[in-house]
Amino acid sequence: KAPAILDPLQRVRARPGIFLCGQLAGVEGYAESAASGLMTGRYVSMILSGVCPQPPPPTTMTGAILGKLSQTGPGPFQPVNAQFGLLPPAEDAGLRKEKKRAALAQRAVRDMRAYLDLFP
Image 1 (tube, rainbow, N blue to C red):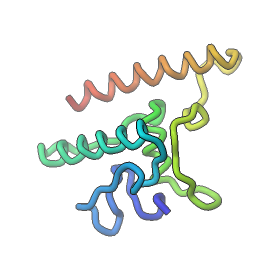
Image 2 (spheres, one colour):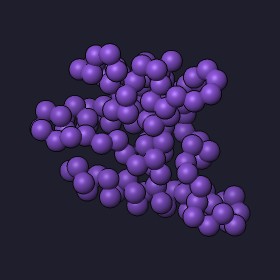
Image 3 (cartoon, rainbow, N blue to C red):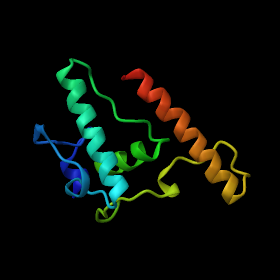
Image 4 (cartoon, helix red, strand yellow):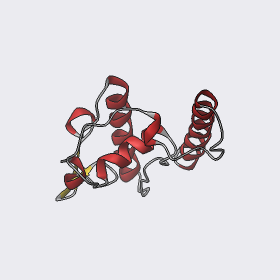
């Protein structure tokens, strides 16, 4: 149900002053819940500082998970946890599984650092 209820910043669509995170928002797992909560705190901090918050890029695991919470798709919603299948494909599709995952992780770290630099 999360995609029908939440916007990309984990706010309740019908009441944008209310944020949900962790298992209430539809993530599964301790690290995923912690990341969701940290991003919610970051969004609130940005709003209170007069900055227009933006979600992290979908090339990061945090961005991919949070994006999944607000995107409607076919079939019923299932809780989301970290998995490489959430990330957009690696630039070099010919890589073997281990190297592909390493490339995805390197891209995610690079993109998250750039995102964090935009909103210190």
